[in-house]
Amino acid sequence: MLEGTPININVKTVCLEHEDVSEQNMNIQTIKVACSNCNLRELCMPIGLDTDEMQKLDAVVAKRRRVKQGENLFSSGDHFTSLYAIRTGFFKTCVSTEDGREQVTGFQMAGEIIGLDGIVSDFHSCNAVALEDADVCVMPFASVEELSREFPVLQRHVHKIMSREIVRENGVMMLLGNMRAEERLAAFLLNLVQRLHARGFSQSELVLRMSREEIGSYLGMKLETVSRTFSKFSDEGIMEVKQRYVRILEPDALKRIFNPQTC
Amino acid sequence: MLEGTPININVKTVCLEHEDVSEQNMNIQTIKVACSNCNLRELCMPIGLDTDEMQKLDAVVAKRRRVKQGENLFSSGDHFTSLYAIRTGFFKTCVSTEDGREQVTGFQMAGEIIGLDGIVSDFHSCNAVALEDADVCVMPFASVEELSREFPVLQRHVHKIMSREIVRENGVMMLLGNMRAEERLAAFLLNLVQRLHARGFSQSELVLRMSREEIGSYLGMKLETVSRTFSKFSDEGIMEVKQRYVRILEPDALKRIFNPQTC
DNA sequence: CGAGTCATTGATCTGTCTCAATATTAGTGG
DNA sequence: CCACTAATATTGAGACAGATCAATGACTCG
Image (cartoon, rainbow over all chains, first blue to last red; front, side, top):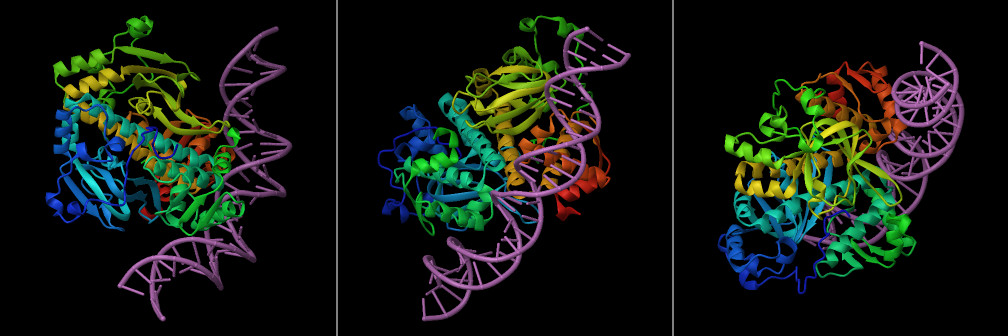
């Protein structure tokens, strides 16, 4: 409900942590990315492209960029040129007020697209920060638009990505406007494991890439409340929590918290 | 910041309340809408279309639909076919949980586009409810996509509309996650008058189309708190409030509440 | 190993919610 | 036109979830 993953794709062999050594040793500028050859394409690219179309797409996604943990992929105020498809790593996006308050607006993982906020004004309005060393495909938006005019399938895909983000944010608004701390954290965790599971990871175990403070910022609560709620879940036997490691023992209990009706 | 109106257009003669009597008496099915002839086109349509392009656009926006106060333009679960451009009237969009909690995700007025939530799954995920008798242009999404492939200017416009909605929701998340009741209401009112002003209405006077409960739902607070906050603003001389009529006396004081830094 | 960051836990405080009563307005029918 | 009703808004008093302040503990990384 939170992050947009209505697409239920069975990724066969996703290995997010490792890459070809050959690629790693290449100069960043000369790295050739090929969507046609990417094990994430089922997550971020439309299905139904023929060989010719795939080749043209490969040409658009010509560059890759590495972002070290803690660095910004883009910042509020930066000129908008490209969308980014995450290959590896984990990001947060956040907006901030002049008086320094920060709101995390989302967490993004491999296969997801960031940068959509920049389209409207040609400037980014949020920061995208790598929460671990990351690797993204750079997709110049002008090229994306050009190609979408040629390929209706790609056009539709771009529209869906944007719509999905709108629907996701609707869900977050519901969370922030209507739910209590426990419900928020339950929904957040369920969403995270669901997305990780779609990428070949466990349904029950996860390592959080973000701090308690970042979770709190996303969920509209203070870090102490996040910590206390984790402890509460732990005490109730719903999950094991050791710092950033979480093992969900009673997924049904979590779902019941999130959605009391379906119990 | 809340609703997307970074476009600063000077609409010369906008008259939202009245229409040609000739149009009103026509059968709804046979009403011919012409963007080329619409006094809202500067709000909802891209600039820079030539005559030929305008004509093709007129063909896409071929139908109009009237929605009475309290009725839904579309509902969660409805099949998605079209986007809607509001000609007259005022809408709220809202999502709800199975256990009946409702979250208002936005208020939309003339010149704004609704229905974007339906693109991702081909089904709407929220309700669009008319808060006063309304009149919308129906834009079949398939036609919009077809035409965007032909006209880069239109394509870019559609992308901007979706991006604007994403950025707006980022702002709402900041509001819900980080701000106190007074700040939320101040930001909400400033946003409303700004958008109304862009449509030719007063900068200082407005009549709210929504109830205290609906404002509260949007801002993540209870209706009593909304009412109390209005009373507080009134006591402080910042505004006159008589039920749904509001006259802002000290816009700067409001801005200071919303953004304490810029004082 | 040590310094710094991050997480946990406790005690207290407070903004908003909840419950409740009253006031105002809009809508209806006689 | 007015009484009547239902819906909406205001205001008060008390309760509570979560914030704040503060101290300790655990982990990370150079």
